[in-house]
Image (cartoon, rainbow, N blue to C red; front, side, top):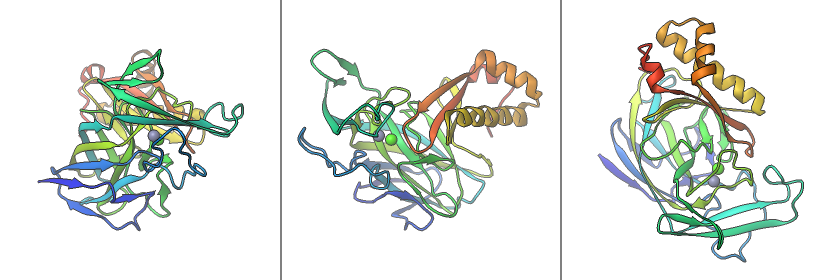
Length: 300
Ligand code: CA
Ligand code: ZN
C-alpha cells in the first residue's frame, strides 16, 4: 500500500506516549510531507524566532506505527525520493554552532534554490544534495526531543541519509513509531553554523520490518558503504562508539578476530564527523561494501 502523510501530523518529541497518526505494514510506502526545522516560520529576511529552543525546532512528521514491530527488531527505511522546496533558510548566532561564542544576535539567511542549485550569494551557487536531518523511532522510557540524536535516531544530521540509502533504525517500543523531518537542501559535515540549508519538502520512504536484528544504534547502507551512526556526549566517545559497534557487527557476522577487524577498519574504513552542534555529537564509521564482500558479510 502507498500512503500520504501531511505535515500537520508532526511531533517535537520521539516518545512512546505520542499517538500514531498512521499504521502501516512491512513493505508499505509513505510519502511524508515535512516542514523545515523552524516549522516554516522564517519566510522573509526580516523574520526571526524569539528563541531557538531544541524543544521547539525540528518538527518530525509522524509517528507511524509499523504492524508487528517489537523491541529488538529494526525498521529498514529506504529513502526512495526527496523533493525539496524552492527556498532554504540558514541560521547562526550567539551561543549557536561552533563559533557561537564569537557571534552576537541571531542571523537568518534565505537561500533561493534555482535549477538544482542553492544560491548562497552572488558568488556561490552549489548543487543541491537533499538529505534527511531527523529520522527516528520512539525510545524506551522518557521521550527525546527532535533536536537530539541518540540510539533511536533523531537529529543525526548525517549527509548519507539521502535518496537510495537504507537506514536501519533499532525498534525500542511496539510499532516503532517512525517520524522524520528537518530536510536539508545541502549541508557540510559538521554543520558548523548549527544549520544546513533548511528546507520544507516531501520524502517517499519504503518501510520494511526486519525481525530480531538487535541493533544498538542506527546503521546505514547505500550502494557504496555500510555506516554505523553513533551519537554521544563528546566526539571522542562517539568515535569510540561507532568503531566498537562496527567491530561487533563485523565480528558477529564473519568470525574475524577483533584485531584483524580493527586493522581492516584502519586501512579500509573511514571515521567521519556527521555533526558537532546538537546536544549529542554524531560520528559515523564507514566501510566499503566491496571489502565486506571479501568476508561473506551479510547484515541479515
Ligand atoms: Ca538537524
Ligand atoms: Zn536541519
